[in-house]
Image 1 (cartoon, rainbow, N blue to C red):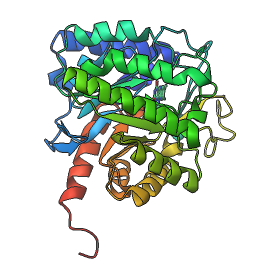
Image 2: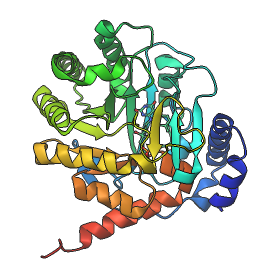
Image 3: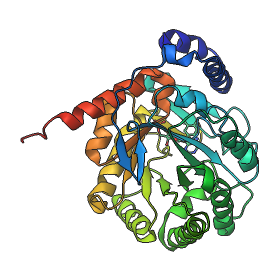
Length: 347
Ligand SMILES: Cc1cc2nc3c(=O)[nH]c(=O)nc-3n(C[C@H](O)[C@H](O)[C@H](O)COP(=O)(O)O)c2cc1C
């Protein structure tokens, strides 16, 4: 059924299709229709960052930037939902067009540029009529006009605003569509940013008597040495997880395709191997000392279990969800559960 719907949606402008399908989904959820269509996800609870996830397959950030649709998305059976990226102030994002489908490669290029209605709106959504009972992550970023050397201020504003309303918070320093953002991922700049974030987390935890874990989301476009260094910096900071990865600026796999040379971040099948490689390098260095949430190019159940085998404890999907629909949630959850029940190779 989803492939029929997708054929219709894919005839529309990608951003219009995106808005329409989420509006329909939310309407169906309010009418309590979703249980009739939602896939049957096997219960496979996992403990990560001190939280219990109903299953290890989550929705990645960026699909529901404003928290307008998390009740509906949650009703589809995801083990967790990450909303955002939200910035302190509302911002329009980049000029249209800024979202491109590359169906030959089950890929997407986007240069949305953190278009969002701001923290105030997202908080109102999260606080009112919350029916989704699963794990809710809130992904925070910086406004475009905030100078790079004041980035920490935006993250602190975000943290203070969402802290009491999220099960976990993601610090997004890896979108390619906010100039300068990805420079925050390296060296002393990263160390200082994460130290500021950690200090605020500790202050809020003491003030509210509530520890909310914080994950750091990184890009796939790093050398193995950079990945190892970043892993060590996040570990040293005392923060709680790494999300790997965001979209790539590489165009490997889409050269010569229609829209293949658009500016922005590439996601979907072409980022799969890069993202899994990054997870493997991070896991090799971290050796279980910090959990990894694996994301990038999951289009099948096998792609999801590949991320777990590489060292991820949880996975997230975005592009695959647009191409495959809710059935991918079930497929990924089943593949991961099956892989966990199988004896290790050679054992
Ligand atoms: C249209 C679009 C918008 C996105 N927006 C965000 C965002 O706001 N914040 C974020 O952390 N990641 C964002 N992402 C990245 C995804 O969360 C994910 O990390 C990336 O797409 C790789 O996963 P995928 O191959 O399953 O799509 C976006 C991705 C797409 C395709």
